[in-house]
Image (tube, rainbow, N blue to C red; front, side, top):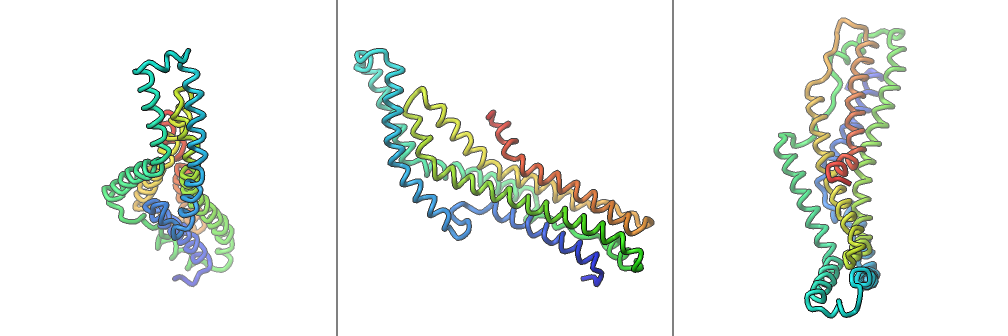
Length: 278
């Protein structure tokens, strides 16, 4: 590593960014049951199991309200075709609550498979690391003490932006995991709304929202792949310019690309919801 403090500071900031990007790559392919050793998942399963009893109670409530709204009289309920229709709805709603966890995990596994396919087909086994060009390192090392003074300010500002963006990026991915946990834990309550014809829109909206959270992983991976292509073709460094101009130009374009990536990751939920019509 270079002995220049300016180069070391920039390289440390880029290393932080590369580590967060590699962590995202690992997190996206990690199942909720493996996240942080599975302790959070065990707690979520306990909450899910406890709320199933409440879900069954709400199932009866939504079913009763739905029958009262759809059937004008008791004689209509006694009709064989209507009675069979109500029985099938009640049985399916009960099955959704009983096996809702398995259905949600199956949906997540499908999306994980899609994400794995995107990773393998892109040709990027891991995200492309961002490195400091050798031309900039050489130019900084050749600067005198007074010439390096403006570089300190440029380096500090640029490194601060890179550190902030790296943590905002990883927090967005962690936020997706927390939403997956919350959706799984609370699932029996909104799924019980399938028992009533007038309330089933709540359950449908819940399923769509959960699917959008799952699909966010695919959008995040695509964003990281596109950024890796940008990194593979780094900005052209003008070796005839002053060292401060070289660093400012390089960091400015790099931070712009990072902002695009972080913005895309943060808006991945909105992108998926627009695709699903939510």
